Image (cartoon, rainbow, N blue to C red):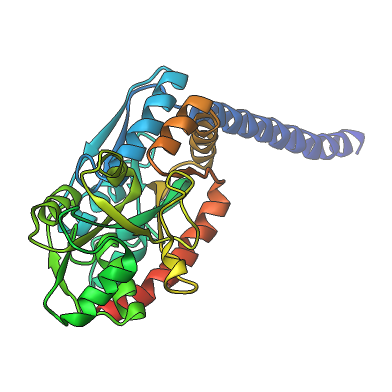
Length: 333
């Protein structure tokens, strides 16, 4: 009886010991996996930009990528995969291996407009990506050629209303941020003006400078050099406040009370990317944006550094989706 009791008494003890050992091994493996996953990056990283080189998203992405590369010692390449209103590059990023080595430069066009614009998309903005950080925000700017007779936004509105449907504006593409922001302005200001779509910011700007259209809307980062060089005449920024970089330039809210349509760049990863990697990348972004030289460079481009946690970025993304839904409905696109 004693032997039997001893055997039964030892069995639970051995079982508990085995379970404890197994549990410790599991924890150890989990900690090792976490340590490996946060050791990012160990090889070059690719940032997918669904829009053309030289665009506002491109300018911002390259500035921040350069600093993160310097801080981590690994190369970061911006790969411009354009086409289909940004859908081609965005879909490519959505299908990439979720390991933190292929990331997406998201913007209103792909992350807040296209979901309302297209009945069928190859990606689902809210489900196929994990927000990492809002890199920057910046207004769009309405510009015209110095050869045009109107010197400010009020004179432009007067000219358009004097010739309904006779004047035109260019955008970087049907359903692009520049198109829909101008559609909001058109609707709220009561303008009858024709939309002419081009493939990319640079072509839309060239058309305006050549006089093929009267105005265009573009991101302040890409338009800043042309404004400072006197190549284009800015009429207003599309935010509710004036830009610190151009304090003499009126905001659209000064003409249309409450108007606010800013653009942004949101760094995203394919869904399934380990949370530890997402947090590590977010921390590297915050470190890069805190650098005085980077902030000075971004300021010179007309953008405001943001930097946000993955959780904050997810909330922001949902709010922007709601905002641009109205723009798509107004445009009829």
